[in-house]
Amino acid sequence: MGPFVVMGVSGCGKSSIAEKLAKAMGGTFLDADDFHPPANKTKMASGIPLTDEDRWGWLDTLNEELRKRSDDKTPTFLACSALRKVYRERLAAELPWLRYLYLKGSKELIRSRMESRSDHFMPPTLLDSQFAALEEPTEAEAAIIPIDPPVEKIVAGILDLIRP
Image 1 (tube, rainbow, N blue to C red):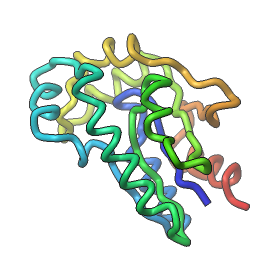
Image 2: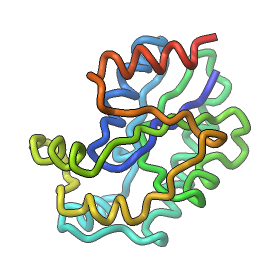
Image 3: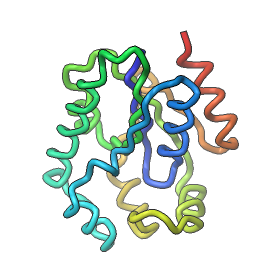
Image 4: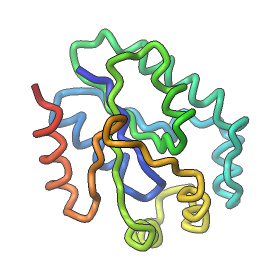
């Protein structure tokens, strides 16, 4: 089963939801932010959006990590923005079973969540650039999950969707 990429703009709940899904399924949780090179994290923490050139090596590393785990008996849940279609294609290379779970919410809701957190390197000032870069997947490309409900309801709904 899987792997799964829990995707969306910063602040939509990717890490929290992916971690809870992994725990519920006895799977593995990976946070794409943990794979960024230090230069990328420094750039984002300084309020500078990443370029495609900043992302290519990072996306290749994530793809390699997912491919290494693709034979595992337990699913892997990667929390990753995957904002553009070309990024999703790069992540999915040689992974025909990769599935996307797109966490969709309004800019206002996400901004309020970002402003209330203090433990993340991504500042709320970069949210506009995240939405500008976002190429929303179609329903054929991803399960589209509204983020308005409480996290527990979102996780339960996703589990209903992905469990065999």
